Length: 143
Length: 120
Image (tube, rainbow over all chains, first blue to last red; front, side, top):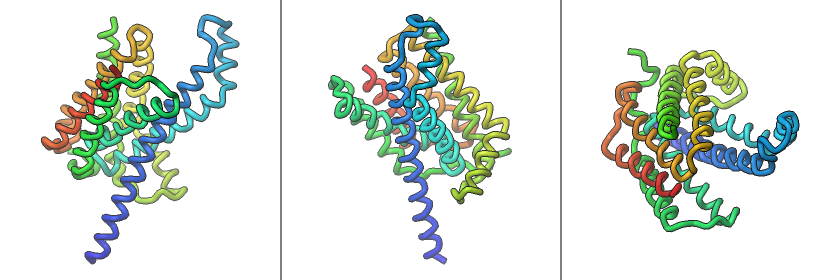
């Protein structure tokens, strides 16, 4: 019995970790794809609106970004069925850390001291909340 | 004008997440991620009014954020909208019956401060 409980707890933690990773990565890379898609676009007023839409919908980065953000939405909604909102929000904020790292190492952006201080502060917040129980509210709430 | 957009973003994003979380909690914990389980969850999302209201409210937040970015720089928009983390945490107790411990509060405050710093 206790072995079953331990196995169930282990499976739960694995599922939870997989979904945190999924939520963070789909959101970060979805936004990155949309940013790349928009960077390749002409200015909104610079070309006729029809040509603008044509350029937008022929851009593969747009479709990749939308698909990733749709996956992000479904994975976040799925997590709400077993974890609190006040657990999910801070824990998945680790996406900001990945964005800062991507900016530094992939896009070669200039990073300020404030930005790295922010990364450290976010990491501390994430670690604090990650140690709390995922669910504190009753399941299937209806008073 | 920019503060009006900040309020619209913060309020619509807060209610979007609270409604979606409340609606999804009624589903009960998802155990199966096979095709049938996935189809069931997608059907639940597409037909549950509270979840759909949450998604709609988050869509308003997204469009309002774009409007905010057209009148204010990113370094203002991101820290200002990080306020929504605080508002969501304040309302999660009464609306979702979550037990927000001091440890969780500290985590949320640190994350909000961190987001503001990253955008500076």
